[in-house]
Image 1 (cartoon, helix red, strand yellow):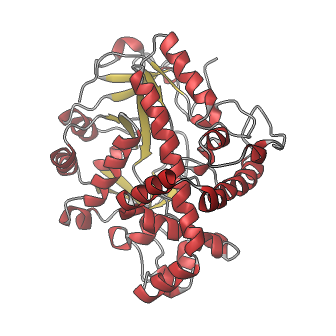
Image 2 (cartoon, one colour):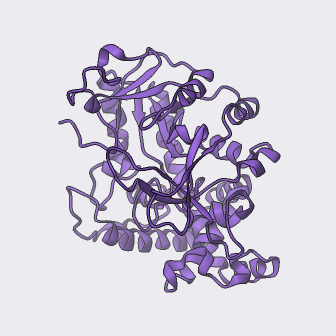
Length: 405
């Protein structure tokens, strides 16, 4: 899919200024949209919005569908009646130059728990009806995610709460265990559902504000999901796992100029054969959610759809591995058949073969060019501006680079 020529800014919401230790969907976000409009920009690119894991990376989330509650604006909660004004009078002092995730998580978790309690006792009929409608509409992923998070918190003192270390009956989702644990953790399950309700309410309001002013949102997703995620726990048949739930093979990239041992990412690998058998319904749902959250979506590690580096899970590095063919054109054709035109950007950086380029071009996806890669002395660099293809997205740098200014 080709896009009209346009310009914009890459800025993740965590970077907005504010008094709560982390950027959120509050006033600063709306002011940024106004800045984009005044600057004659029309694109705002963000990083993945999912709930981050223990490394605080948006590329390793607990869910491919859920949003990060840390991005919920306390000020908007007060404005909308989900918190009393007194709840945000005494805010701790947080660093202003960077996010210190430990204290932020502790503070906002308690604050959001208070919002849930306030909602249960003081929520209006209109708010409760909207919440029930959200839960019904999103139940296909929300029910599993909320129970997953409640179970993680309950077992956090054992191996960090990683799902395959839970009691076997719930790790393997035996029906009786699902029922009993769901009842035991019912209040916490409801809290996690409520936080997703707040997240989507605030984010979609901000997105609508941007869209109404001519600003399109460019979202971002990694090709692979985290092992410790609701996606893997709820869909073990779609991944290469053993009888205990552990990965048998994992994702990464082989040794190259930057690393003698390659990169051992650790993500579980998809059973593309199983996904093809059911029409890639999980991926269709994932992309549908992406297109709800954003107008255009960048897919990280696009080359993995053509071929990916498979590493035995017991290998300590990425040196030992093999290239395995991905789903290729059949996958994107299935997505197009189910979802219509695909407004995707292909992150085609790294070791790109003619086959990867052919896959990208078969669906007219724009690739990426990074100006910081252009001026290192290589006279024939594909990142030099005069070599750019017309169907490209050009960055001064990405989240992997230092900022230019």
